[in-house]
Image 1 (cartoon, rainbow, N blue to C red):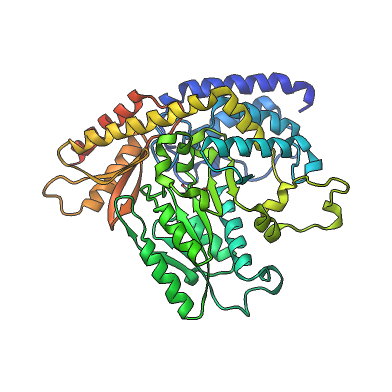
Image 2: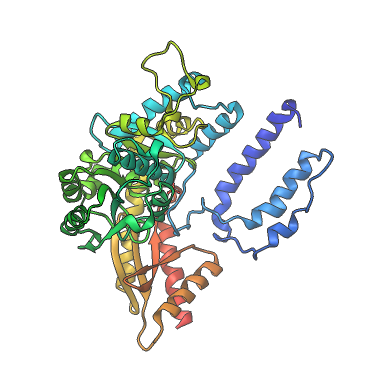
Length: 470
Ligand SMILES: *Cc1c(COP(=O)(O)O)cnc(C)c1O
């Protein structure tokens, strides 16, 4: 294919994409393929000669689309939404056409300077104090890894990268029982080791880390000759929205000189609404904070916002400058590749710029407020319906429940069958989790095009299918 044919294909793809988004609500949310269906439809060997784009595109619709779970479906209530608002998709289209490598300032000054400005827009938008500097990471997992490497290096007085960990006392990192698995993996990759990730029990309605237990664990470790290095806090946990008492936990961590990282991957977007900021009161004292604009804010995947109170610690941990990466004669510039584990970086800031300008913060706040209000409404309706039991109260737009009619012995089995039946039905999509050992059904609303009607339909589908099963 030649670039001279690109605009025609670009228009066709744009028409297709617009039509897809306008009609995606008519499709079953979750893919209905069986394992191996798509693999079997793909030839075992690549073509030796060029094939017509017409044929490629036809196969895309025929083979690929049936195997897609529709994350942009207005009744996708599973996991957390990964939104792709139209303006951010346009920006990605432009970026993929320009395809710049944005590792250094000089490899595309616009990308670096746009990133600096957009991260500051985001900082102001979520009400973080002046003085935090931001960088876009590809995922919250990467941001958490970068933070864990930084806490490791600080605790080892910057010798870990050179000398390794073997000769040191064990480093200890603290988190609640509700943190995301990306924390475990960061601990593995950093060489700190799973056995040194200390799980602090949770307490209270928000199921947050108990600050007194955190303090006791740090003291016990120090007394045992180990080195407490950092604490990882959770604001809006994936399973049920668990949220640590940020101010109290930071007080404890600070009193012991620990580096602190806050994972607000999902809930951070909601902080553009001032009325939700009490959930992370005290946040300005954290060393490192991550949230994912690619979840609730509407920025096309991938785009993770990582804020640092002192980026020098991160750069000291991750920067490496062979001659071929040096930028001579330009003092005071930022090379963002020194702020992240991967060297190469895409131009991700453009889609934030397009999105925020196209919606305005008020437009984005409206969506989040609606999701939360509608989700609370569904929660109230389920609570008032005989046979249903709320397991965790709403945190933002997320709550968990189960169907517990009388005289059913195995409620876990019943609820797993209920989730499966709902997802096979196709009108809505939900996932399950565990709450105090019980199988729970998770509901969260966060898709950009979701309407109140869509959430009301969720009630009808859940009630109808549950009654049929019992
Ligand atoms: C989604 C999520 C993550 C992981 O985000 P990635 O960007 O996919 O790495 C981490 N923590 C929480 C709380 C999340 O909701």
